[in-house]
Image (cartoon, rainbow, N blue to C red):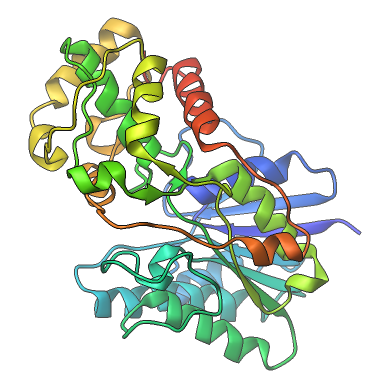
Length: 348
């Protein structure tokens, strides 16, 4: 029987790639939810819904009576961790309680992240396993997961949670996308005839890191939504390999036809602040898509990731043991994404 997916956060890096993947599968139908309209042509219906408003959810989603699977990748930023808990739990609750009242939901798939293990706080146990104890709250992933566990206990549907790390792909205005930060930073450096320098701390240049290809994550989400073994389970989903920036950086410079220099700590939020005019000129000169400089890359996220001086490692053995054996070469992924960004006229 054909399945019907409801994708929340459909214009973010995770949702956008999931919608693209699902739309190519013959046994799936798709409805996408986002606050804004897509900036690209698509046959998938996009609904503009404010998930923070229960009344808007009730009004906009009541007709979706054939949805069988919900993929939740929506996120809203707040100034404090406690405020993030309140807001992001409300997103999930409003969607869940609305859609389960009108549709025969089989499974809810929640996208979390390495933040679940405290990767944003400092050195933590690595490789991180799904069974590792939580850190001191607040952490909105805990509240969202606990909410799904409680609701699923009613027996009407099951849940699954995926924990990627450093998701890479293309999405406009996405605050957590290191591949776009890297591509735009390298493009501007090349335009200024500078070598490509790692802009973070020396320790981060040498620490072990990991990434998750957004297309790889999309395949994992469909697996987690449909495999019976995934019911009420959480899984780490990364490319499956590890790297150090010091080894990858020369390859990235090579893919841009650039020389690379030694690391030099350059806070991107400071040094990219005045580059908007330069970017606008580059858009005109090279015929790039007219995305605003403010939405093309999130420099604060780049500063956060490029300054992590401890290992970031997730154990993906549980997913492999239960049947998801897909893997991605991270060096190949960056090269492929750079070529894709060029082909799509995002960078010259």
